[in-house]
Image (cartoon, rainbow, N blue to C red; front, side, top):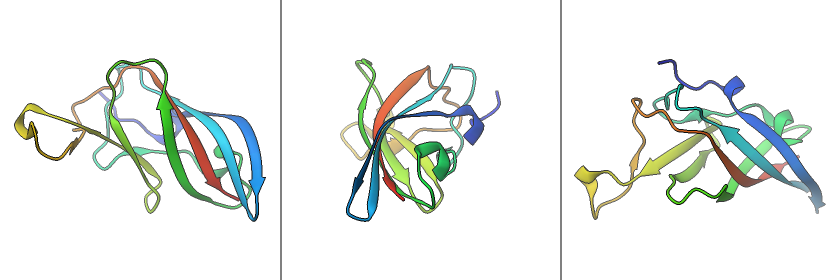
Length: 118
């Protein structure tokens, strides 16, 4: 199966705010259909304009997920502009969460997030 690329991610800006010299936009990030796999190192995110920014995207803070009872822990890798997914696996039970592996094909999900930038 092919891996996710940035064009497989849909970002919808729900609300835009300006606080001081920063834009704080509330967004929904949607991806997954169980047909595309998680790429090593994280899911490439679209460019700053998709998040309603004019110049740059400094950070994405995931604030929730749409009604799923189990989900990944998430981290935005701002250096590489990727969304990383982490989970507990049997081999690491009781240990630190491991990054999802390239064989995983996440089902459809929507993350609620705040995008920070300008």
